[in-house]
Amino acid sequence: MVRFLSTRGRSEPVGLGTAVLQGLAPDGGLYIPESIPVLPQDVRQPHGRVPSFPELAVQVLSRWTDDWLTPAQFEQLAERVFTFEAPLVAPAGETDMHILELFHGPTLSFKDFGARLLGGFLGHLQQKSDQETVVLVATSGDTGSAVADGCSGIEGVKVVLLYPKRGVSPTQESQLTVRRPGVLPVRVDGSFDDCQRMVKGAFMGPLPARIRLTTANSINIARLMAQMIYYIHAGLRLMGKGVDGRAPVFCVPSGNLGNLTAGILAYRAGMPARGFIAAHNANDFFPSWLQDESARFAPSVKTLSNAMDVGAPSNFERLTYFFSHDELASLVRGERVTDEQTRGQMRITWQKNRYMADPHTAVALHAAKRADEQDGPVVVLSTAHPAKFPETVRDAIGLEPDVPEQLAAMANQPHYAMPMDVDPSGLLELIRA
Ligand SMILES: *Cc1c(COP(=O)(O)O)cnc(C)c1O
Image (cartoon, rainbow, N blue to C red):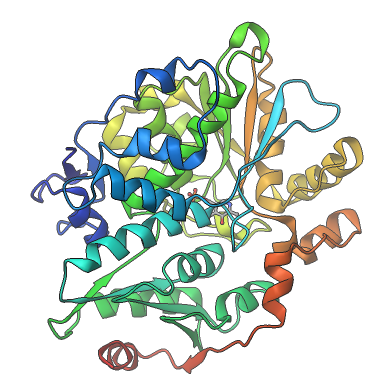
C-alpha cells in the first residue's frame, strides 16, 4: 500500500482515501506518493493484445489504493469510469506524429478522465462515512463541467460550482448549467478571481461537523492517477511500431502542469518515454524556469487557449519535489507559443493535414513542430474538442466545427444556475443548507 506525503513535509503521511478526501494536505502542500509502484512486467514489456483502459487502470493503480477499495471493487469502478476511448490519430502528411484525442468523454475535454475517477473514489469513500461531502470548485472552463458530470448523482456527494457571470463562453455556460442530480451551479456577479476567493473563504468555515468540504482541481491526486493511464495506453499501442521501436516523446499543452505531472508519474513508474515537451501559451513561467532557475510566477494573461492561462502552476510543487532543476531540464523541453502562432497552426493543420484542432491542441502541435524530434514517435496530447471553441475555430479557418452528440443533446436539456453576489457568507449559508 502506497502512503502519500505532502510536498511541504509538515503533514502526517496518509493513505489514498484521506489524500483524495482532503485534496490539499493540512500543511498547504500537495500529496505525492511516497514510492511509485513499478508498472507490472507485462505493461512494460508487452506481448500480444493491448489491454483495455479499465484493465490497464486496475493493473497499474490497484496497488495505489488501500483497504477501502478491494481489487474486485476497483475493477467494477474502473469499468464505470473509463467508458470512452482515446483514439491515436496519425494526421495525413506527417511522419511518426500521433495525436492522442482525449476529448471523447461526456464534456469533451481530457478533464473527464480525472473527474470521473475522482467521482468513483468519492462514491466509495462516502459509503463508510456519516459526513456529507461537498465538492466546491471555482471554474472558468473545462474543469467545472467535467467535475459536475463526473461527481453527479453520487450518494452523499454534492457539487457546488462557482463560475464568473462574464468570463465563460456561451458553450461553456451551457455545459456548466445543465441540470444534474446533486450539482448546483452558481453564477457569480464577479470575476474568476472573485470565485476563487469565495471558495478559499468557504474552506475557512465555519461549517457544521456533518459537512466535509473538498476540492477537485488538479491538486487532487486522484485526477493525476486517471491521467497516467492514457499515457501508458498510448505508449503500448505505439510500441514496436516506429523506427527501431523507439519510445515516444509526449507533447503536453500545459497550464497548471497536472497533465505533465501525470505523464512524469507514469515515466517514474517505468513507462518508456524519450522525454516530454511542455507547450505553454503566453503564460510561460515554466519554459522560462527550465531555461533559468531564477524565473518567478507571474500574474496570468488572457489567451486563446484559456484553460492554460495560469500564472502560478500548482503542480510545479510536485515536479520540483521529484526532480532537481537540471534533471527536469533534461527530461522536459519547454516551449512558448503566441496566440498568433496558435491561430496560424490551426489553419496549417487544417489545410495541410485536414485535421481540425482546438486552440489548446494547436499550441502543442506548434511546439511539437518546432521541437522537430526526428528520431522516433511524437505523441501530441489533444485536450479538448474543437466544438468547445467554435468562435476561435471560425476565426482561424473559417469553418464551423461539427457538434458532437454530447454537446448537441445538452442544448435541449433544462438548465439552471443560482445567481449570487461576491459574498463569502452567502456561499457558506448555501453550503450549510
Ligand atoms: C485544463 C486544460 C489544459 C491544461 O492542463 P493542466 O493539467 O492544467 O496543465 C489544457 N487544455 C485544456 C483543454 C484544458 O482544459
